[in-house]
Image 1 (tube, rainbow, N blue to C red):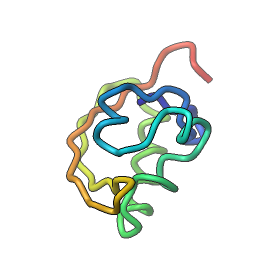
Image 2 (spheres, helix red, strand yellow; image 1 turned 90 degrees about the vertical axis):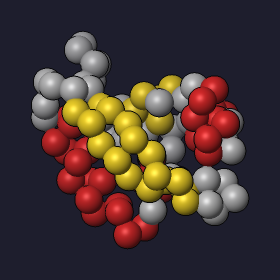
Image 3 (tube, rainbow, N blue to C red; image 1 turned 120 degrees about the vertical axis):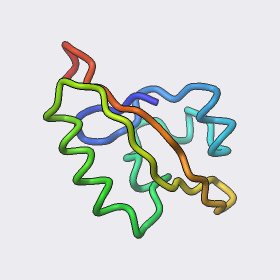
Length: 86
């Protein structure tokens, strides 16, 4: 998955589609925390997202995501700012 600086989804690969149950067409331009981040983790995710946008290093995280069916999955993921992207 690739997000813009506001947290909107701009790329979503097949693995994300399989994991979440959503197609890219359904999630395009939507904020990640509105779809996948468990409500109790949204404040933490906002904080992490701000740190990611201000960092030049790659960082590892773990959080719970909610699938289309409402299942919660613990996801280990890494984040890095893509140079030249706004």
